[in-house]
Image 1 (cartoon, rainbow, N blue to C red):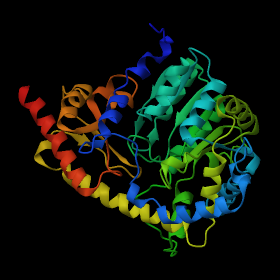
Image 2 (tube, helix red, strand yellow; image 1 turned 120 degrees about the vertical axis):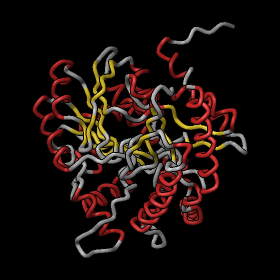
Image 3 (tube, rainbow, N blue to C red; image 1 turned 60 degrees about the vertical axis):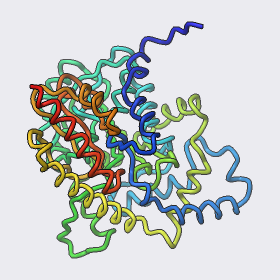
Image 4 (cartoon, rainbow, N blue to C red; image 1 turned 180 degrees about the horizontal axis):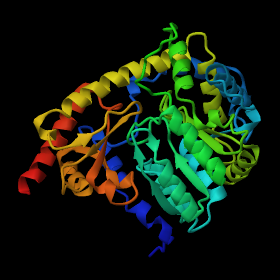
Amino acid sequence: MQYSFASRTAAMLASPVRHIRENARRHSFISLAEELPAQELFPVKLLEEAAHDVFGSGPDALQYGEPEGYFPLRAWLAGEWEQRKGVRVPPGQILLTTGSQQAIDLIVRLMVDERDPVLVENPTSPGCLQVLSMQGAQIVPVESDGEGVLPDQLEALIVHHHPKLFFATPTFTNPTGSLWSAARRQEILDLCRRHQVLIVEDDSYGELHFKQKNESGDKSPYGQSRKFAEAYPSLFALDHAGQGGQVLYIGSFNKTVAPALRTGWAAGPAPLIEGMYALKQLADMQSSTMNQRLLFQLLTSSRFQWHEHLAMLNKEYSTRLQLILELLKRPFWKDVTYRIPSGGMYVWVRLPDGLDSALLLKAALPKGVAFMPGELCAVGSEGASHIRLNFSHPGREQLLMGMNLIGETISEFTARS
């Protein structure tokens, strides 16, 4: 039978991401493309113990739960933000979602009609761009400098387009790993407040930072984490936990605990959370209560120290970043340029002039290696000249081999020109 799919699905169905994931299932395939944390760092033993405790608590863990999400976990998040970031948000203004991707999908479906203009930091998360495309939004890119998105350009675009939303990732943008300055954060928030544009702040990578300097004298993982939050406050914090009505905050445990738990959240003004809650009930009734209970059991276990766990992740990812930066100095990569990320899981690499990332990927796949082509992370022509490399998931040997194979493919292309 011939099926007639909705026209808005065409780009998604043709996306090379599906082909990359199919290849990644091959045993010998090396993927530097996917948004994967290091699985050897998952707290497997402690999660096993937490699961035993959850199942031992009785059949209630397997019953339908609160559509807003497991209340003790929402209360834990509220307490963590207040203690470490000085942000007070009622648990009732937190909605637990099936990963941060669902939170993005819900706010877009709630706010955006077809052809509505939406501003996005450029480049940005492929998942965000896919959701906006599926909704039929007019996606308008906003460029950045070393301090964050450009205020003058942002204001001009707001005046011209009157956008519904502005998607921003001030702390470790996917794919660049860039970090907005504190001054730029306040400037952008003030600008959006002046023009009444809602900011959707994606902080999914916000805990994965490589800036460990701490002048307070407190060298503990908690002290370093709190110092970072004070130096680089989220837009949500600057907006008084959304009480100003200007920011919806999105986060996730997928990159810091384990992605299979599929637990993210949205926090912000009550009308937005209530609207997203209503749409979520249509989508899946609720996210997995059992996974949320499992997370809560882990986070409150005396054997698991959240801030020490984050410090361990950051130390290991910093080591892996240094390795990929060393590999980028090898002759294969001599004609590329890149900016060293401040956090996250990726390096955003500009290819030699005239080299197209999609064609490069097509040549790399038969060699048994993949990266994310920049066209999936950017609006406009910039994406074609860039690739995103994940350094968090591959082990040392895989990273060495994968970088050599990609570098070899680049050399083959440049030799022809």
